[in-house]
Image 1 (cartoon, each protein chain N blue to C red):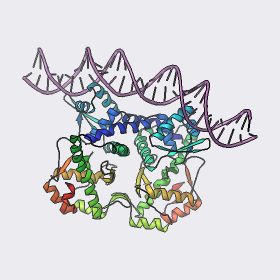
Image 2: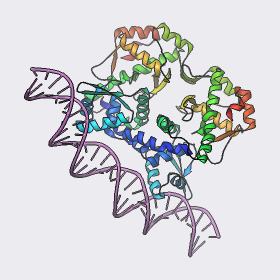
Image 3: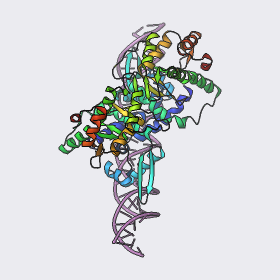
Image 4: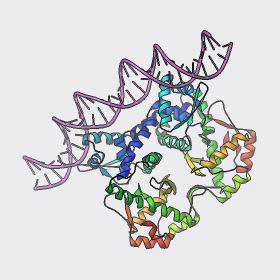
Length: 237
Length: 237
DNA sequence: CGCACGGTTCGGCGGGCGCCGAAGTGTGTC
DNA sequence: GACACACTTCGGCGCCCGCCGAACCGTGCG
């Protein structure tokens, strides 16, 4: 043991940051990868601005959030992809029980189905769209899931041919599995997942719907995905 | 958002289970993959038996621990590898700050170095031993880390040739990276990591030191690792 | 300038939770 | 059957923490 117990306080403190419903709601909201203002988060979480200000202080001090002050606004976003991964992992562990009580109202149901069709998960694609892309990559021998989760050499070539640069940053893995909470299956995350998502949004393969995390595949996107990955456009609708 | 906020309470509740120092200490202790009695954990954590009993109740109710009652003993262990992975992930996220304050006493230091040399991490190998094995597999083209984390076909062959059966169980990935908290680098986890560790202990490649998680490579193990993976025995001492 | 507005600080309130020791239950031992 | 022992239940204590509203800063705008 020895040094291991030195970790218990740290672990407890980190978990403590996530152990509050209001803070959890903030982190989940910030999973969209964008920066929110303190006020937006307060409204989203349904608490007073003063309350949320304190929460932000703790999350920033704990290293989970990065802040950026602009004028009289305080923007916060997840500190890095490690934090995003942590929140995703934790959330997916919870999903089983959350899956029990699903859509209730009509609006929630329709918004939910848009989210289920396609959305961003921090900085990569998720939902049926994310799964479809991941499955297509796997089916074409570009991504290997049977023995772990990694791109193949052919996969590297595919990204190159598609004009998607994969630049290694720090210690973030090139490919990583992220468990999808609607589909209950892994989809592509990591550097490759982020690059692909960015490319998809940049080139107009898909566009964001409203201010939510949901995304929609464009006709041009359907053509591209059909040609490059042999994805049946119908499966994305 | 919609259904996403339904997750916030669940996430907070899960995190809340980890957010107590005593419970965290228990979970970290249970990372050795074995079953502990309530009394052992109480002594380990330094709290009254009654206090720990309540903690166990919460952890079991929360699905993090599985219990098994034998006579007047209550044995608990981590519920499954998903929980182990969660605790590992969380702990490794904390490691940076914990790394600052390291060994102090002589005994802690020597025990620490035994742990650093080789240990089990839930059900797979970690420490310098774990890293050495992982690096060797990678160097021989049996494991691919540059594009993600997965065994190669040659890797599957190697396991087969070594007589290590890899039987897929449920949704657990065959190969997965687990971040080592002493080495700050990933080592092999998942089904393959567990099978390799089990094989190493079963065939006497290494043995446990005392009742701790630390393991030591035997002479026979040095021969085997040298022959099968071209690992220099000196690097393991 | 003055006002509106986003954000922060502070005091105070209330609830929740971890802790203990004492008493209770069941199991194994002599 | 009596005793030891592992664990659990219960009551009570004290602390911590999230919440709010009110007062306070600073920025941006008319």
